Length: 173
Image: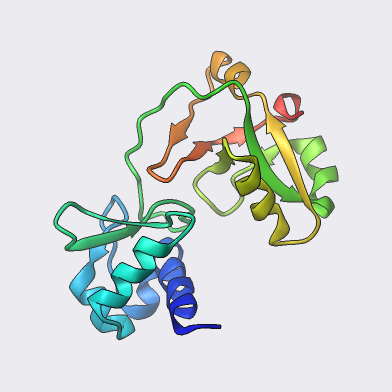
């Protein structure tokens, strides 16, 4: 595994789940100071820029002057509130999972587990790739507009991941 991949995985872990492991502090929007981050994980700004620019999933974003950085989604730490506005979703969204989880999902729906939200996408390929991480992938179709009309709140991140608190089984195709 290349050093950039290892560093990206560490960065993702720290910014999404455990900033304290390296003594980082996240503000309420999930940002941490770039200069402190570089020092704590011993990389250069050029390496960090390379990771952010080349991340195919858009996992990271800088603030306007590039003095702060955050993970765009997937936080399990309760310290972060991404301050997203609820918006109307498309008719259908997708959720990638794996074969072993289907029985439970059909029974109880999708829950956020240890994250802030259930993650959905408009991109079938992205959903498939998410499902592949734990086994044979399954892509579920979510009746997002029906949920929205039933007063569920949807949020969209800067890297096109859709959030919702939960998805009851009746909205899963």
